[in-house]
Image (tube, rainbow, N blue to C red; front, side, top):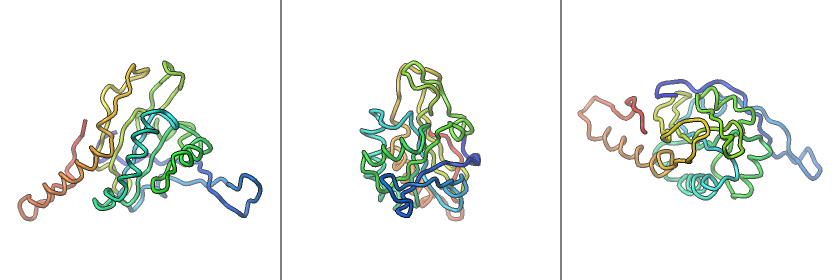
Length: 197
């Protein structure tokens, strides 16, 4: 995946709380498509190897949650975390972390991740097929900026993290806004294609 590419059209099988269901587990299935999440808005998407894993649970998700307001000030309307986990796992993870601002999107079959070109084998740590760690700024379903960790490969011995951190993405957004403000009149460089790596 690179800048100016469209987000793939898939259906996310989510579960949402619905008190009308009743019982001890008042949730129902709610299918949402890529258009529902990415159409007509500017969002940050980030993906990671899996729910409840150390770096994801200790740093990445909590930091995005904490910095949510900062992203809003930079024109981001929503932040989505995608992982190759089912809706039950993603909901339990969000509850365990106290997530209130981010939206955790389940990609249980890995279809979205595969179509993004980011599906990798992680059999070396007992995971099977999972997502490589990356992030993107997406404007109306089109990738505006791309943040991919180095070393993309199957069964990578390390789990690099830094390029797709919320701090790095925020810095990039702010730098672009500053550059756009000081560029010669009539020239807008705030959406110039680039690859952050």
